[in-house]
Image (cartoon, rainbow, N blue to C red; front, side, top):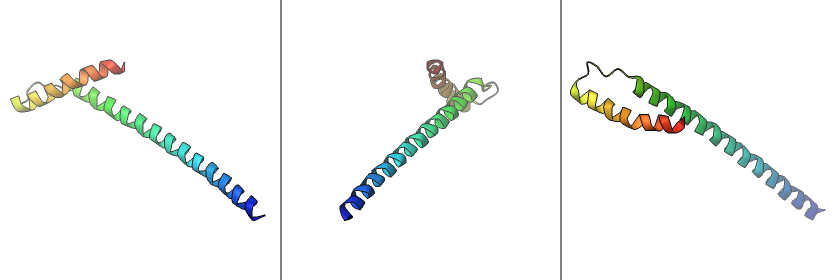
Length: 77
């Protein structure tokens, strides 16, 4: 009887572990989707930012950021 219990417990542990792994994969997928959404939003904000009237240093900062954001936005389309 003791061997059956151990075998059943091991099987239950394996099932619980597979459920845990599946849950972690689902959480990772959700996290990746949220990160992509945030990155898309940040790229859109950089691309649409009005650069007129900025001092040279700030203008150059946003120009470089925009230069990097545009290809990323195009590659995701």
